[in-house]
Structure formats: C-alpha cells, structure tokens
Length: 266
Ligand code: GLY
Image (cartoon, rainbow, N blue to C red; front, side):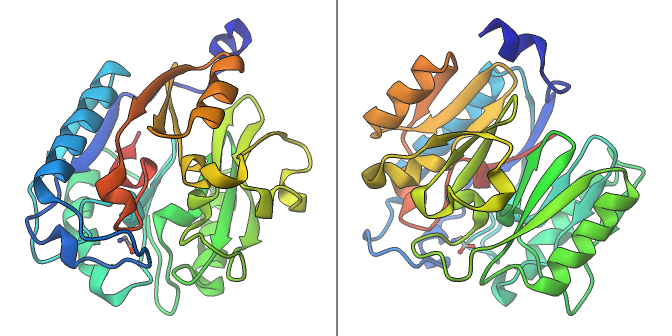
C-alpha cells in the first residue's frame, strides 16, 4: 500500500453533490430492477456524502432540482482536471439543462472553463481520468464530435487521451459503468473491455462476470468507494491493499447510476 500512497496524484479537496429530487424515479433508465424508493435513495445519498467527507472532501451541495429527475448524477455535467474544467453537453436532451447550475458553481473555482459545443454531446460518465491521460468513451450519450472536442481541449491543456467505442458493448450505459482508474496504472475493468488496446500498458483488475456493476468504483485520496454486495471484487481490492468504503447503491443502480455519477470531485 505504501507505493499507492507515495505515488499519488494531488489529493481531491472538494466535491459537488446534489440530493435526488422527489421525482428521481422519473429519470432515465435501461434497468429492469423496479422503482427506486425515494427514502432509501436519500439514506444512501447521505451515506455517500459521509464517505466523501471521510475521504477528506468538503462538499458543495447543490439544491435538489425536480426539473431534472436525473440531476443527482452530477458527474455527467462536467469534466474536472487540475488545470481546467470542461462543461459537458449531455447526450440525453432531458439532461442538458443540468449543466447551468454546475457552471454557476465552477466559475468560482476555475479560471479556465471550456464547454462542449453542438453538434457534440458528451456525458461525464464516459470520461475516465487516469493521471495525465484520459479514456474517452463513445457511447449512446457521447458522440464522436463531443469526444473529439474533448480530446482537443485536453491536448491543449497538456493531457493525452484515447477514444474507446462502447456502443456495441452490452450492459453498460457509460464507459465508467465498465472501468475505473484506481491509480498507479491500475484499472478495474469488465471482461468485455479487458482486451481493449487502450489498457495494454495497465495492470488490470478484472471484474468477476456476475459482479460487473461493481466496476464503477471510485478512488478518492487514500480510499476506494465501492458498491456493497460484490464480495469477490471486494476481496480483490482488499488484497490489492486499498482502504475500502463499501456503500449501498441499490436505488441508484435501478436508475442506471453508480458511485462515480453522484459527485464531481476536484
Ligand atoms: N439515469 C441516468 C442517466 O440515464 O443518465
């Protein structure tokens, strides 16, 4: 574990979060796991916020917004790097208005603020930061125009990137439904993406086939947040030396959401 701690990128100090609105269950989903319980979703969100605080983050809490039932998934609205922020243009038209309130916060923290322009679309869930390199998913939400715009902005800021087309990868909405960067050139990855050339120089932690939802885990400073209910993957992370915070995510899973989706960390 000491090499993990010694070889880290700068720590996150803040996160933007937004509690789900009472009409959260009216959001978009491809899952067939039933209607989420609002009370349970609030409880799970509270535990998630407590976990981020445990990781040392100060939370910036946006007001709930019933105009956008998916707006608790704040990660989709921006890409945050140490140098700059990029406002996205979510691929689902019902979500595009979510960006405005996030922009209003980010202007206080970033002097370099870019925005994805039409016809580009891009969801933050498709973007995986791996140190100074970014994996950019092309999905049903992020189109090629959006992905190329982001790659160009990142290149101008001194970052490298690689595109990963997941449009024909079954079972995942966003790239980060199937991968997570854990630091130190290590990637958690579902079987369907494990042989992608983008990961050839990385050490891979392959998700057991019946635990793929757990791929959406999040490294936050010296912790990894992971979803409860995935014992084999939990053991793999544990044996790799990570300090884990295990969180119930059932109500967000029903709405195609994961741990990374619930915050913007910077
Ligand atoms: N429910 C999250 C999304 O589909 O964007």
